[in-house]
Length: 120
Picture 1 (tube, one colour):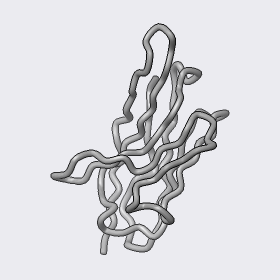
Picture 2 (cartoon, helix red, strand yellow):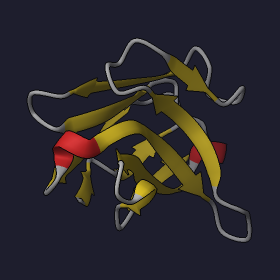
Picture 3 (tube, one colour):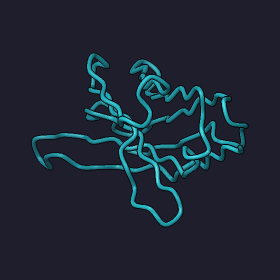
Picture 4 (cartoon, helix red, strand yellow):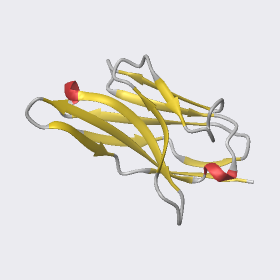
């Protein structure tokens, strides 16, 4: 599975961005997906996650009410709509997917990351 993020950039505080994560390869085996972020000097943290069918989502407390995760399985793409952005949202955002097969069990995959910078 290959994951490619897009949509990052520079935005002023209060603005919005939408990140996309396009999956290719053995996408039929993808289960849960999610977005993580890592700011300079900090550990990578979970931002939002979504189950395979999109029916269940969860968010970090710091983004609840501002970010929305979604996925379009027909397009093999996951999204993160980010509204009311704050300077503390500045980080590299990574797409994550977990596949499951009987032969290999759960296997994690990561995208290369996309930079989001929020200016005050």
